[in-house]
Each structure stands twice: as structure tokens, then as C-alpha cells.
Image (tube, rainbow, N blue to C red; front, side, top):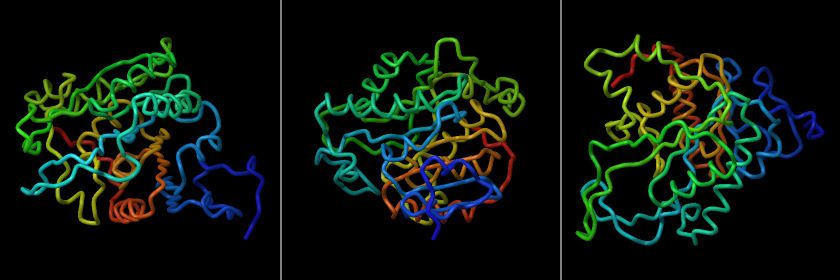
Length: 290
């Protein structure tokens, strides 16, 4: 096994796979042809290994911190809302400290014209939005994903939770961010243009075909991630997902010809991501709307 100084380690070098002393720094999965890497490591242990100003786009689906022991409906049956220890309910001060800490690193690693997307619900999205403003990002859009098939509200105490948010933000107020207006227009059927251009996206949840190797409790549907990647990046761009879970962002990047680095600290989800990536064809056909 080779031993390398940290400065010699290029995590975004897709052309070869270096052997390194610390096994958690070795890629969990490496596809040099499609320029895709997965790492099994904690997000904050990984950030300091990333150079400044090197990432074109970040897609992040961080913990929502909603696991409080409540109930939901899953497959027609009552189920606990708990996702895992990483999603356990925290005091708001702790949630905001976490969000501002990882977003400050995103600010550092994004290229001058880079952007980030962050998913959330009311449990975390207000903290995320405030942190983005504190760090002088420019919020470009607040996309609301209206779920076509949300689980029913079993408690009969609230309105049904049928939406999630995606905040899209540029690194700075002066950033010249990518928005592929013409490409979106070219691939959109006339009847679908309203769906593409509004900041309300009515789309279904994860399909069965996206869960054949297993599922992540907060997995996003490919249709949402495809729309994000196509709209705000270009072929050959480097996309980074700091909470990649079961690998949806990587799968979409492979289909659309983007480079991808994803990290997660749970092996069981990276195993799902690896299987999905291996099974995914490299097809740059972008016709996925609606």
C-alpha cells in the first residue's frame, strides 16, 4: 500500500485511483470512464481535503432533523417517522450551527459562478435559508416540490404534509450562474412549459425502479434531480453531493454526462448507490420531462 501526504491526494482526479494509508480516504467506488467517485467518510472530515473554488454545482439533501418518534403512513400502514440517528431531532441552535458550518464549506469550494441546491422541509429549511443569507449567498429560487402522492395524515391534527423545498443559491451576489433557459425550452413540450418554468414542481415520489437495490428513507426522485442538474450545470461540470445517500445525484450525473463526487458515512447506502451506478447506462438523452 502506498503512503501519500495529504497535499498529494487529489480527490477529484478521476484518471487513476491512488492507494493511500487511510482506508476511509480511498474511494468506495471509482468509475474513471464516467468520472464518478463515492467516498465513505463524514462530511466534515472530507471538506478540508477539497480545494477552494473547484466545484461547479452542489446538490445537498442534508438531515432534516425531524426524527422525533412520531408516526406516518408507509405502504398503507402506520410507521415511525424516525430515519436514523443522523436525523434525530435537535434544538434549533444545534440545527443552525450544523447548517451554517457545512454551508460555509460549500461557499469555499464552489467556483466563483457556482451554485448550490439544498433540500428541506419546515424542520430545517428556514435555518438553511437564514444561513445562506448570513454567508452572503444569493438565493435565486425557492422551489416547492408538491408531491402527487403524499402519505395521508394519520394524526388528524394537521394539514397533510405534501411538499418539500429546494433552495437554489449562487455563491455571491455578483456570480454569473448557469441557467440553461434555451435547453430547457428546446426539450419542453408546449403543454409542459408551465411545469418547467414555475417555482412549483408537481412531481411524483420515488418510483419502484429507483428502489430495486434498496432505498434511503429520504431518497429524492430522479425527475427532480434531473431537472436541477440540467437547468444549472453543463456537460463535463463537476457536481458534488455531501450527503449522497443511495446515489440518486450520481445516477443522474452519469446519465447527463457530468462528473460526480458523492460522500456518505453509512456503508449500507453507499452499497445501494454503487449498485445503482453500475446498473445505469451512460445515456445523455435529456428528455425526461415532465
